[in-house]
Image (cartoon, rainbow, N blue to C red; front, side, top):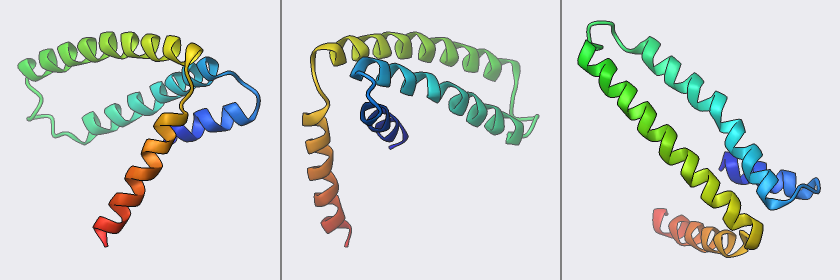
Length: 102
């Protein structure tokens, strides 16, 4: 994943785990905003009503709050733990899925 590659690259450059995770989260912001803007531009104007805009606003606020708390939790977690168990899990799962998909 993009986040995993970013974190791994920064770890290899000598950054600590929490700094690498924070940078990865910050790097996601322009990507998410750009993808959302593109999706809104591609959506026909007759689809977006006032109710939809209110729902988009509520979804944005909710996502922002939960993303903030999730990022804060993960950064604190990474100050004390490594991502090695997660990496092993991902390799095992991807191997299994590779053979199932054949």
